[in-house]
Image 1 (cartoon, rainbow, N blue to C red):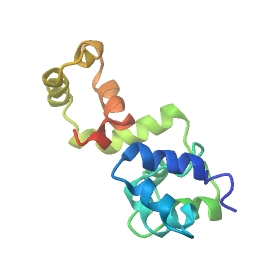
Image 2: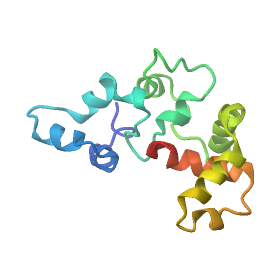
Image 3: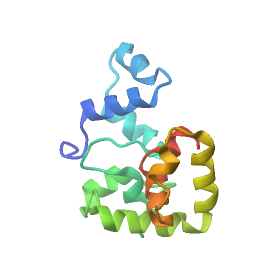
Image 4: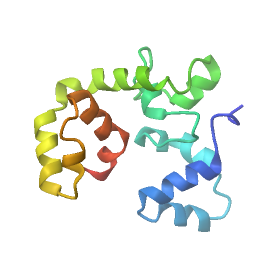
Length: 142
């Protein structure tokens, strides 16, 4: 059952936070099941269907073929951690991102954007900067 892994209110809130009117369009469409919406293809966007399941972290787990396997369905069928503990998840994400992440370039972009964020992260390590990026900033297109 999807029950522990899919939370319609959480999923809708994520769609609303992403903007673009998708949540409104789904709300107005009659008969749209949000779980079906996620399962059909939206999982490929890395959307989070519930606080308990992290699509991207699960897809970074070895043995997952992200391009062809719906991670939520695989998790339900095979079990396993739906959300790795924070440190394990961060280590896995950083290991995947490390060859492509330039901490100095990212820090320079924060400084150019202003707003005090660069000062707050001035002493941050490359891992901490990558964590900041992975937490949400990547969704902003930075």
